Structures are given as structure tokens and as C-alpha cells.
Length: 93
Image 1 (tube, rainbow, N blue to C red):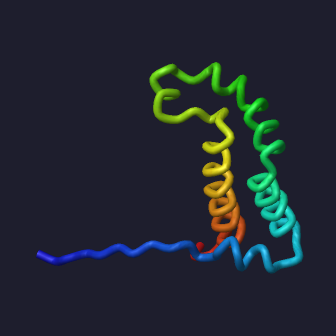
Image 2: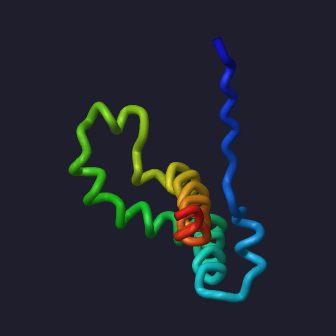
């Protein structure tokens, strides 16, 4: 029997991408600014309301996408996904 260890980590980091001067870094800064702006988060939460109404009630017990604190968490994940998808496209193909 062999032991297999898988250690995954992002290929690129948000901090590295923020240092760049391109469209991606501008988008990341806009997302970061939104995370720090309570009124922007409230506005985004209002925009999420129609989506929230379409979700099953049992899902909303654990996760409400229209709550600003949940949106803040999601924005952090979104930044990571953007960086890794956009900066690694085409690598290894």
C-alpha cells in the first residue's frame, strides 16, 4: 500500500495580482473596495434579493446570500477564483 499526499495551493495570489497594472488588478481593487464599503455591500445585498427568493428555504437556514457579511466572504472567494482562473488559463495544456 502506498501513501499519497496531495498538497494543493493557488498558482497565483491575489496580492501578487494586485501589484500589477492591468484590468485584472483594477477589478480586484474594485472588489476589495466593495468589501470595505458597508453601503456598497448593502447595495449588493439588495441586488441579491431576487436570487434569494428563488432559493429553497432549507438552503437559507445555513446560507443567506443577501446578508452583507456572507457577501463579504463570497467576494474574498471570488477574488481567488478570478486570479487563479485568469492567470493560469492555458498553462499545462
